[in-house]
Length: 250
Image: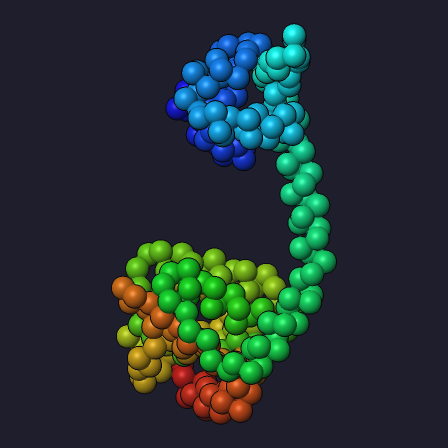
């Protein structure tokens, strides 16, 4: 019963609906009183649950001598129910897709007003990196002053996945790391559109630069990122990067 409950709840049934449905499978055609005794659902709730189950096509009823009796429909009806939910989800997905442009425009307007966004934790860093390249297209460039490298294996895997995704999008990358961290070359090995050089200067945090944005990432136990939307600041960082690129060594 417990395993059935978890599985049926996953497809959208409530705990009470599962108990009533399973009770009816055991009882067959049954009066409300027996359903209450078997499912341990109160009389005040059982009628509402039975009505919902009928709407889902999982329960039906007959009337004998002015008394309503209920029974579970063929369990195969569960597949029909899931297919209906799938169709509903597909329709809802289409509806959401239609309003994405409008929501994106609202986000853009807010982003233009709010120049700085904070992110925290593993998922936050991943979101910050994806947000950073969201407006970049094939042929655009992405500059990076690397710190000592990602903190821990999970960040290394995330960074490599991200760089592969970015390269697939056709975004070019140049990175500058401190000479001490030449082993970081393995992280970017075989990633297209990616160039790496080294200098003696150390940066305390990873700094990512595009034509209009700056992303500052600190990898630690509580990793944080700050996304700055400012063309003026981005241009100054871009110029500084270019001067460092000239003196950096492969």
